[in-house]
Length: 146
Image (tube, rainbow, N blue to C red):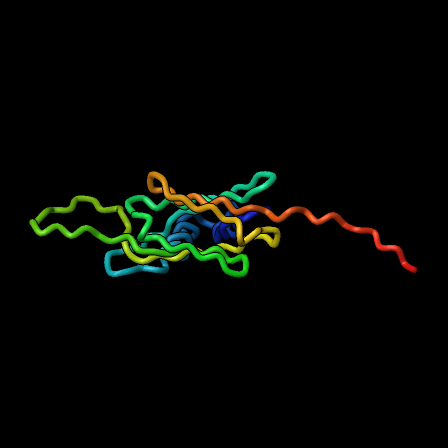
């Protein structure tokens, strides 16, 4: 199973297309969603598989497990939550702020062979780890015609 994020630049990676144009388009498509404090927090997702499970890892640094919601409905896995910005009362000068805050929601479609009743979820060191069991393979059965 191959789950890949759509890359808008793949279609425009021809040598005749100027790099400045592709960079501009990439910035537009990747930064369309903004909030009051700049770009929103969009966690990265990795999906791997072995013979018996699909493994999903979501990078959620700075969150607590109570801040995260996981929903699996009709093969659609949705991870949502909110990263709160820490407000300091004293006046400080910010020289560089790259951390993203705000509500987030990521959804991916999983294959047909998942067992929705067998999902193990744990949160360790800012990484949400989900192990989703695969259904047993169904063997094709030859049917005799009478």
